[in-house]
Length: 169
Image 1: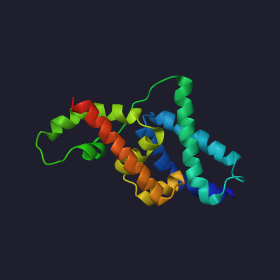
Image 2: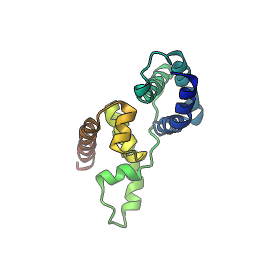
Image 3: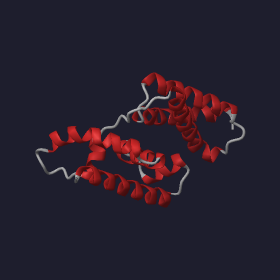
Image 4: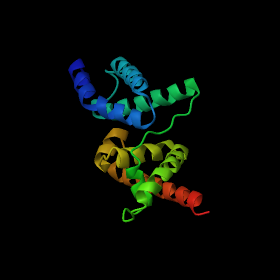
């Protein structure tokens, strides 16, 4: 792989990864640092990583850098979401009271997401907050489209179950 390919990948994929890191709770500065560290690692491994899997590899490296950052700093990050997407999983948008309820529920939504498995959290953010297709998610995570659908189905069901358990008491 040559530097031109790396530069092109940076231009095309860095915004998406940066946006994902922001959604996970990074500040802009933290997300920029993590992206920089990830691309430094990409330069180190440029000849080893398969070009077909480079995008998913870079995404994984960025997530791992983020997780390592959180562990090193021993901090808990709150997910930064546009709650309307996750709210649609649980509620129907036919009610006027919804605006008020949505504000109250946004805290609960973030708590539930923070307690899900990492893959479920990632899939829900990519699908419902970043509005990516199954195919795009599969490319990012190096998963088959059907596998993405199955895992996303499980993630939605887990989210709904926890939601109901917390809210129907």
